[in-house]
Length: 302
Image (cartoon, rainbow, N blue to C red; front, side):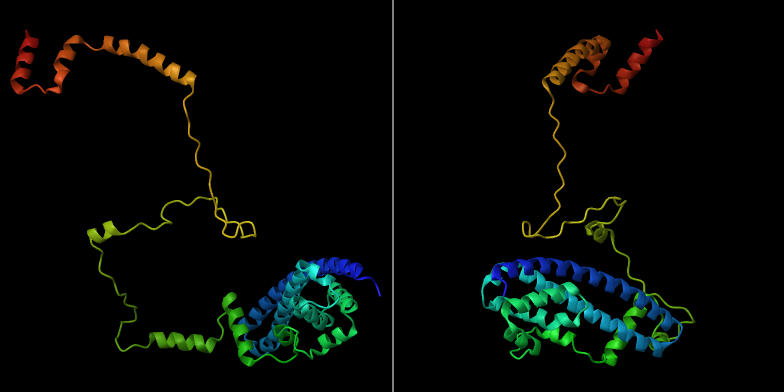
């Protein structure tokens, strides 16, 4: 039997490979499921409901497998984060659920890296431990893993919900009987409308209410640049966007000296341009009355 340290190092490497492989398989299955959903929408649009009900079971089974791979990926990440506990001879209680779930579910998947990880875990903890995990005699395997590995036909309600969601996503009028019944129920009313819908108009707001109302935030032109907030991390649990403030411009010594020179140059020139007669008239800021204006007009005629 290989030493414990060498087995643990192999488990670390294999866990990393299994995590990356599980993510790739999930992305591939998600892309295939989108194509299958588009095909189901076409069948519903063509009125082939029975064929769509049979084929949608493949989509349901594919979604369950994808969810199972996601759970196993989380267990692999847990073991990778707690590799220090793998050094012990006996399985730690904090790792028992993850280890036994991987041993139980790995043979039922097509991920070779996960199956190799299972072999290393069996080599690490022994055949008796692996037998308990395979039979789930102590019930330590996660219940959601056991439930997702059960092979059974989906409920008819679940099939109908899947078809309704597919029809809503792709804009297909299905089920048509419910749509037409709801439309007929909306049209039936006791009061005649003359074939036209009557709108119930609200009373107009007064000027006082309009003055108190706050304008909407999205009023006016929007910026073409949008900044998404960063995702939370261990270093920053509640990230926020902080924009830099505009820099404060402080006048330098040269700018201050030039301003003083220009002000001293402009002052005498402005004083020269002003007529002394106008200074006397404008002092005090008094406005001449009608009699004074008449006297000035007579003096100008002379």
